[in-house]
Image (cartoon, rainbow, N blue to C red):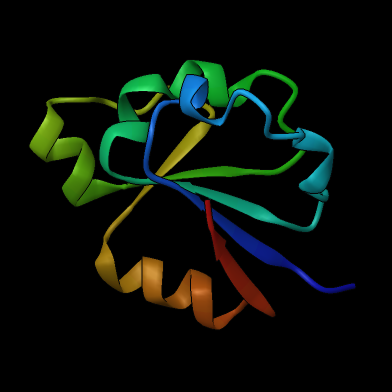
Length: 89
């Protein structure tokens, strides 16, 4: 099964028409930039694991919730390299 890294950089409300059904169980979600502020709303009905870019979280003074994995830049590269493709929304 193919996997996709879905990259979000804005709060969930910005993507008001986004269908979470487009995200599969094998996919991953990466929150960066201002999406870090809205992490709890990205968790709602989310079928895939969530990751948050550490540099973006630190720059915004945000700590990830327990169910979100904080990753550094090298881990971000690995996340993309180990997936079939990535999509930036």
